[in-house]
Amino acid sequence: MPSKVETEKWKRQLVENAEKEILKLTDSEKFKSYLDTVAKFHRYSQRNIDLIYSQNPSASQVAGFKKWQNDFKRSVNKGEKGIRIVAPYY
Image 1 (cartoon, rainbow, N blue to C red):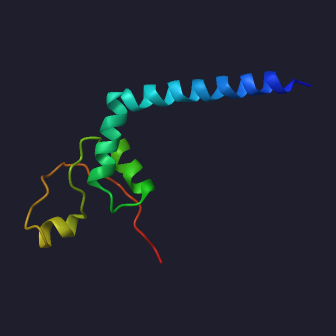
Image 2: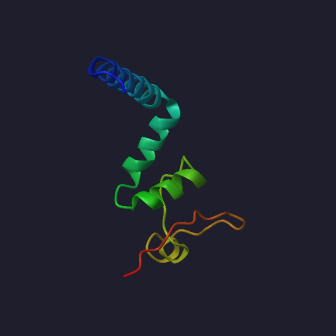
């Protein structure tokens, strides 16, 4: 069984390693890109944000086909691929 000193040393090392890994993650451009997506789609669920990011990290707006046509008076170009998300159900 490890001594109290050994346990404390192990805990400190564990925390230091975790801090280093977190700093690496938060410094990466990929993480910054993900945070941009989170900021743009803050009204969506975390699962849908992850789905949007995984399909198109540079997406700026997401809406259904009919919403683009009716509400925004925009058309979807032929051959365009949609971003799939999970619709809420109650």
